[in-house]
Amino acid sequence: MRTSFEALNQWATQGPPTEVEGDPGGDEGRNRVRAVFISDLHLGTPGCQAEALLDFLKHHPSETLYLVGDIIDGWQLRRRWFWPQAHNDVVQKLLRRARKGCQIIFIPGNHDEFARGFVGHSFGGIEVVEQAIHTTVDGRRLWVIHGDHFDGVIQCAKWLAYLGDNLYELLLRVNRHLNSLRGRLGLPYWSLSAYLKGKVKKALNYVMDFEVAVATEARRRGLDGVVCGHIHRAEMRTIQGTLYCNDGDWVESHTALVEHFDGRLELVHWNPSLGLPHGVGTAIKALST
Ligand SMILES: [Mn+2]
Image (cartoon, rainbow, N blue to C red):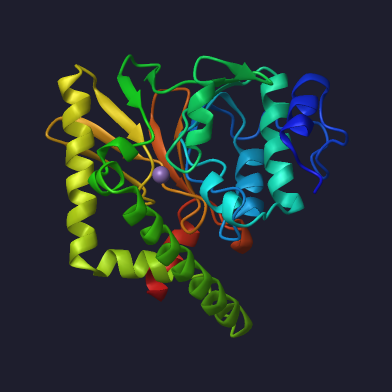
């Protein structure tokens, strides 16, 4: 087992033992944005699409990077240790980015709730906070939270949430097999769980309730909008005058939220395998469903 928290600390203070390969000269210049918001990476699980994420990060250097929860999946690591090189590379990349002057803010979620014990501290230049307020260049104030506190199931019955997590893991495994088959048949990536989530009315109602609850609370706090994750459903829309942004996830949809230097917010659907610019991969995916 190469990775431990001692090793993380060593990287944080002295730099990683070896720099990430294939990244000579760093990320300067290309698609630089003001802020990047990512969540639900679920590092430590087979579902995590670490290579796609590395590719996205490489192409989107930023002044600020928000890690909006469920970055490392402590729930699943506790059950079974799973930590391939690509997951190491993500951690190395984040620490390296912090050393190079990017402000990195980590808001723990429910799967990495162990990190909630480090709120108020920073390690390797990564600040751990419970929540944040991001002010866009045009002055909009956005509440940045993971979102699990709005999840009634998780608050009321933790064992129920664990059960849901197991079923979800199974679904992702079926999805991977299905997609490796689709890949052999020359068909593009297609998300089974995204399909099911989109089709099941109950799930949709849950998503709607979540979105409205989060936006309502942001408005109650006198903010212009909210950025969250947690439900693995990327979205950007106005709910009763309040901007609701969900940056999606990196286990199925490869999505992130970015703020450009003119204050424009954009949901990026990253599809490195097709080697196509933003949006095109999503359009192909949409056609194939
Ligand atoms: Mn979550």
